[in-house]
Length: 134
Length: 134
DNA sequence: ATGCAAAATGTAATATTATAACATTACACT
DNA sequence: AGTGTAATGTTATAATATTACATTTTGCAT
Figure 1 (cartoon, rainbow over the protein chains, first blue to last red):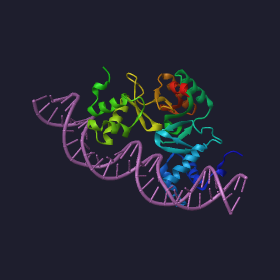
Figure 2: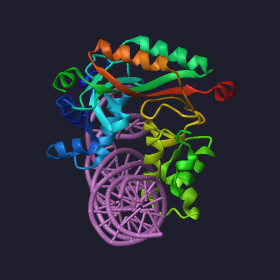
Figure 3: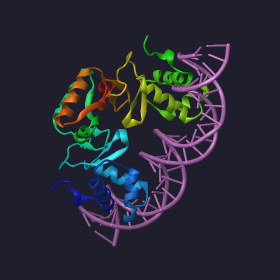
Figure 4: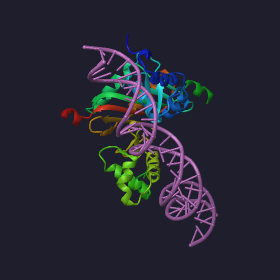
């Protein structure tokens, strides 16, 4: 059996649960406020849980927004590299998958004699829903 | 004549100058400490200058590092979208240019019925120099 | 040249995001 | 039971960024 939620500790499960039930990325302090009733009192507890969840690939950070999302892909390989579509209207986030990005970026890097290791891609625009409304 | 440094105000010129003389991205408060002798006293003065410089494309923000770099491209069109190679060893940054990225991301977005507007791409790895050393 | 509007500035306070430091507890493995 | 590692709890503080408001400078239409 690989890494599943079963391996997670109480705090990690609590933080992951909140993120999984959210339709948008959440900020660390928003998570904190949401779970103070569950015994988590300090920012550090949230950040530590997030660090671990990110490390095992269950959560990704949206760097440009200082926000965090639960990963919906079973056994996500994006422990390090991440690619998102971010809606500027409703803040919803879709994670891009597939190795074509990986190989594309490797090539881009090679052109500059750069040794590609990982990446962070954030594409901004309008999601399908918001396109229709606007 | 387009937008050049000539149009910049004192604070903006000061901040841009520090960034242009740096070989790596700088953090806002590092910039502040470096230019306090030049009459800039508060974080806000730095952030305001940065905002303007980013708006006109002379400076870009490295989101994952909360850092700022001066753009080396004359008349950079990356007022909104940015693409960087970031060396994990020496922290140097190279900006990727060219519209192929633009069109590539548009296609990726289309697949998800997403309306592409702009992007932020950060590729991490080893730059040419550091590759040789390691 | 003068007066108006927009932009930029100065300053203080505060909000937001994240980590340091250190003592303690839980748990797997021998 | 003893040991080592990871996780936790708690307090304080560092680092990053913005709000609010009073003032000054600048561009430019009259």
